[in-house]
Image (cartoon, rainbow, N blue to C red; front, side, top):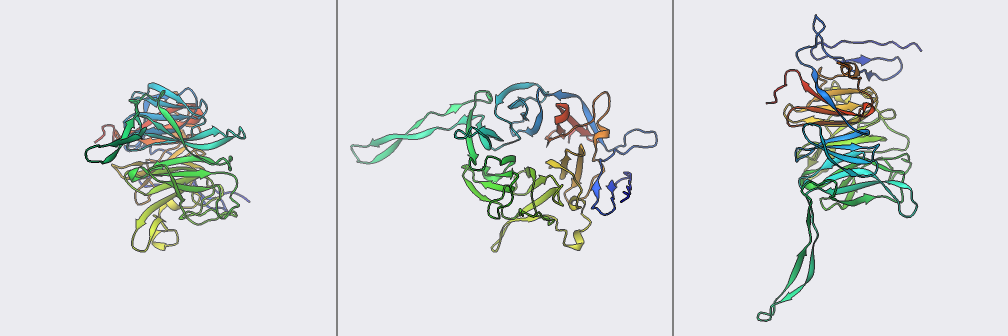
Length: 396
């Protein structure tokens, strides 16, 4: 069948659409707006030089609550701590880190791998790194008041203070599933109160009760609470907005229970799912922010089917209330307003091949900082790249 490709260039709010006869439309890598003399338009993302080289393969990036930058180096089996100038301050060994988050206590949570001590196979695991303090307060005895005959517990505090010494910080295995060694944890996000959500994936979704592809919820004490039942995994696949099959990451909005789940959309219609938390007398749980079944929302760009090929990560600019979705297959950053409308500042690989630098290649991680800088873990090129809006070089 002959494929017809229609390209619609950017002008103000412009959408790039590829229409393939017989298929749902997919987005093409966005192009930057240029004016008549070939220069970049007034509002576009400009790269900050130089990029930061990473010794291995940066797979995820986090702007920490402590204003330090953490990079998951999958290839070298390390977490790197970096300062604002891109210097690696120290590193910690951890097997194949894929995602990283930090709670309000400054503990790091890392989705990685470990060795099953019984079978010696690798398996997915979630670790906590006590970056500031490792609490080990425990009851060591009972004190008796001989006059009043009262008793009280005697506590012993053997806590360690690491003071951001990442290399020496205590690491605890929080969760793993030895009976399902093929499963991997690919995304983690912190909820208010320091509970957290984890995106899990795997090759076996035949079980109706416990398929590999799930979003798991944990309490603040790290106790596994429940899978999120508001997202559905079907063995035969599905095309509903809440169908998941191949999760790749999760981003929890700051100080909120709302989240965006990203996934490979080769088998699912929606590569990014925006879920909003509701708690009423009759309902407690998550519902999709945008419902394709409602005609009034049919024009929302965020939920256009097949918009992504492989959405791998998301981040949020709370100042401008805008969402960024990273597509590792298209080597592109797709930007949306809080109402789900496509933003013309989106950009693709062709915009990053400038000034002697290669085009983005298989980017896997994305983060947005308080100084209005967009960070991208350019995995294929082994570097961290930084961008700012041309109209926002000074962060207000």
